[in-house]
Length: 432
Image (cartoon, rainbow, N blue to C red):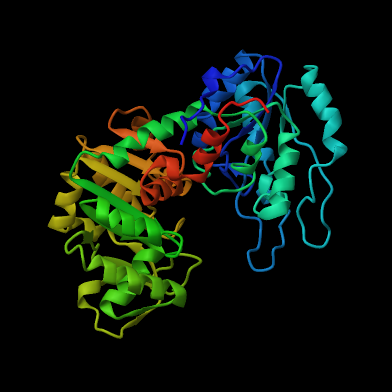
């Protein structure tokens, strides 16, 4: 494994630079929290100051149906809100090109000649920059084999240099991995900073507490097993906690996928090797409906008092009373390192558990507090705006741009195990 090539070592004068960013922050046509855009400005300014020409690309949401393969071209997955934000912030205009759409399966077939005029204008300085449409609208983005290789070559054909500044996008997709095979490639400033900051995870001050939530157990089972080996204590939330409760306490919770139950069963067996590591928030909120929080249609349960075989409706939050437990409270307030990739409740109607958790973590001013993940950061900002504003510049906080990447890196045991990092080191700045 070679060293990771850095953008500050690249000659960018007069060159078109294709930059993969993680600007996946547009929800329902609105940029709710621009944090993941703002943290890429250092890389963008560096490229422009060196005389480079910008082409940006990001994914937005998950427009591809995994069962049918059809790609949803709804405007809720468009990059336009991101472009609008950039133009207001940087006073720079980006053009979003359009391409031929697959009328049957949705999505763009490929990058066609429609972009050629824009590329000529970009090289001649007649436009400020190009922002490609949502890369997941292209059929080759999440493909493998020949289709991925072809799309990778098309992307590489747009530019002279590739820069990956999308630390939060760890998946080995075409725009993060394949394109690096065909261009001199470098890590942007954000990517470099996040990689350095990972040492706080690999070599934490102890006690080390991790708080992880998620909507699917299968996407986190590997990292959770690795965390059990790494951390001193682990708190679960969301659907993965619900599935764990079903298995451990022999209860049924509405809406839990049978596959998650089976994965939770295997995880529970593994957790028995680490007695006392998993801390269980005891009070959970049951609701009769997913859509809203209605008086009379939700209630709080103490999981210790539930009889085996009990059948519950949706469990949508951890009640704040859970954090009055002296053991949980002590572990949070006395931890030296805390990693949070968790929204404990089903937002926007069930937020009290998350709000109380974040507030309690903030009271521990001695801990190195690391937050990761788009939903985690957005909800932090929404629920505790004053605390969030202080935390952004506080020495005891660090916000990673991608929580899933941290979990993947923990599971791999080293940042060099990430496919995106491997792709950069394999073709670090080499002329082709």
